[in-house]
Image 1 (cartoon, rainbow, N blue to C red):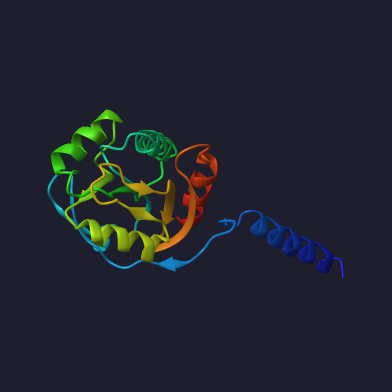
Image 2 (tube, rainbow, N blue to C red):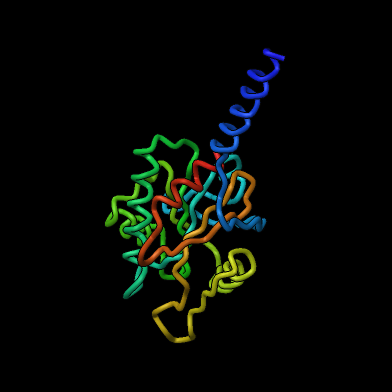
Length: 192
């Protein structure tokens, strides 16, 4: 009887500590995305296979954007630095151009350099059609992208997305204003 109480107490404390240490993503989703074929700012072919086994953060931007894309890219740059400072490994960043005709590799590189993007784990993608990216964004990320005919600006939403190692979207966040950096870092850690 004397030995039974300490063992039960030890089991209870162990369960309590295990429950406290669990990592979870609040309000997570589990949406698989389809493969894509793109070209990076460096001219390399890029698709979902390049991200397998990695957690990644994605957004949709274009280089001639007159309003939201520069702050979004600045916010992604800040998040990239936070990931590095936290020592998190196997985390990539992906910015899909939503104006692929204008956004050449050269334009994407120049744009990314303005925000001190670290190309070791951040790719800026182009090399597909306008129709493809509009459909891909809606079908896979449930985000609206549309370039009206004859216009220079692309209409789009300003979310950033957390994607897991298997290519499943787990959560979306504001990428423009009031970006929840700490929450995103927490959620990345929960996937590792």
